[in-house]
Image 1 (cartoon, each protein chain N blue to C red):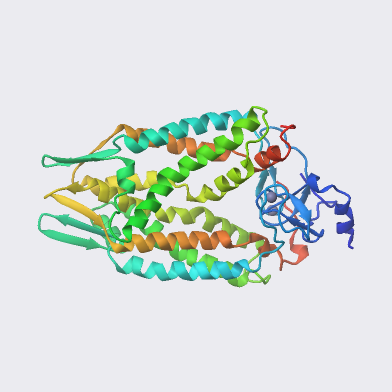
Image 2 (image 1 turned 120 degrees about the vertical axis):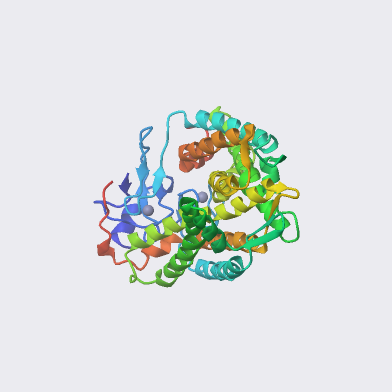
Length: 215
Length: 216
Ligand SMILES: [Zn+2]
Ligand SMILES: [Zn+2]
């Protein structure tokens, strides 16, 4: 047993926090609200608690759920040229691949831009609402949070937004484009989703699910 | 926060006879198989992950070829039908003077995917040795791949929007070509490949002396 091992052996396991990216072990010290604990070896952010983050995240999640549902059914964009016109919703755009193997693509696209973001918000609410309001965690809250984190890279609303910009330039030659109400809703939604991701401290959530009474 | 040892020296969980949960950062005795907090599987260093990384990498590459050969967009205007590939579409845009948009498409559909194939292969080949690049460089490369990889999907979304929107019967219609399917698969496979990579391996072959921790 080396010195290092002996030293670390004296620290209770639940006072250790290990960087998931490089395996460096730290003795846990709660950072002040607004400050962050960063891995000194690889600079990964380990803990980033914020004052009242829970309530903010809940508020934003509810707003995003409403916006996603509204933005998927209202008209998103419409074009017109030589007396002909066509209006589409986001759901139409996602489901435009409808033939043969492209059907798979339609489902994936709809998933990436509507259902995955929506599901992540619902899971976040399910996990956070009881904890933030000092109730015991919901059943399977850990599993729900795990799923929500696993889905994070597959939530692609912001990429879809940039895709819209590119598509608009491509269509500009062909026809005139009008923006529907869903277009603006989607814009707000993208900003909220990004803000919410920056606000959520993963470690704090795990910790409060493990020790609900302390938070 | 301070390193768990003393005097600012890095001690990894593995050296301390522990295994860490990569999902929730909790430490456990090395014999534990599952995290007692979040239920994730515990592996101290997932060397087997390299097989998964390579398998998904190959799948991604296989899909990338048809994605560039087949047409991505089929545009029907009055009497002519135009089938454009990914690169063809970008060249058309540049001809129309939309250089910025052409650059975005080339960047998202060609530069990012090819860069990703190279970067993942480089990391997977050099991860066991201290050679190739320093651990910090390798990690930086990994973070870039993970962050930027998703953005390749943009071209798929452009195709989706265009083919839903441009349905003006008798005037102009746009339909997606088979390349869209292969391109989306290629992006998904490379994203999964990058996710399968266990970054903790990067630090394993690293000589200890290199690891003067930088204070932030
Ligand atoms: Zn680290
Ligand atoms: Zn865990």
